[in-house]
View 1 (cartoon, helix red, strand yellow):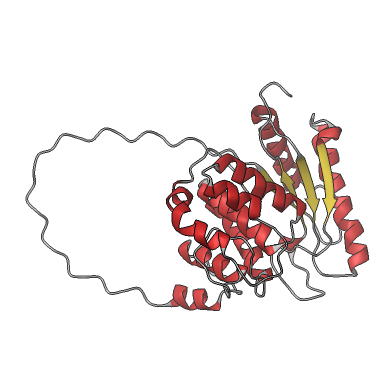
View 2 (cartoon, rainbow, N blue to C red; view 1 turned 90 degrees about the vertical axis):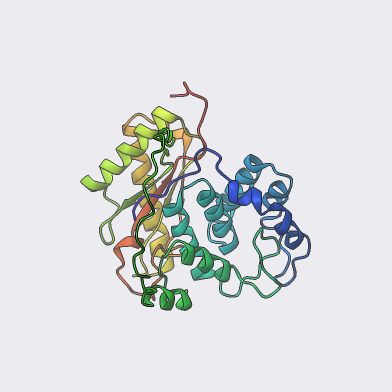
Length: 290
């Protein structure tokens, strides 16, 4: 998986159906030291303001990209907009770092012992995604399927009018793009150049605000060295975007060293999936900005 979708059209039916039962949990949470993370987004959902909740969860994730609860809330927001693949990537990160994290504010059925890993693994199970941080899910996915009941004879045919064709679903606009690098390099490869061109094309066609390029590394070498390498990777992607017509002032770069791996590993591991930069186009601007 090398692309991470940003939020599309509002399709939060599941969240709206759960507001009444989940609001009680939001008011009575206990456990983790109170840091207030997620409260504004949960409050907005309880009030039925989906757009504000999306904004709050997005802002929390931008301000605390390595926080398991911020990752989980951002994943929930993406998932409720139909962007399951990108949500699962964040659920994996939340499961990796959320083992001992009991959230203050969570719009999910839980008690005072539920951790962020518990709820992240629950959603990965719903999406049939195995993860090393969810051992019970791994067992579930490898269990044999239930027996198939014997086939029943078909009911008698009854002539019916043909149903009207279902409307075509609205296209999902990709808001996140992932660029990968060779070991210990910040050079833009031909494959990376194609991904960056697609990101620029999307930004120009659909608009973008608060564009962020975040660089990452694998775990080979010191944190200090990899911090500089991750910043060079983010800067290289930004420079390529500027060459393709983007405004440099519209793009912020961030280096994360090996603090936020896509694939968790031990130290000194050459993991290609972790040698990356993520282009986040943010929320759409008004048409005509480019």
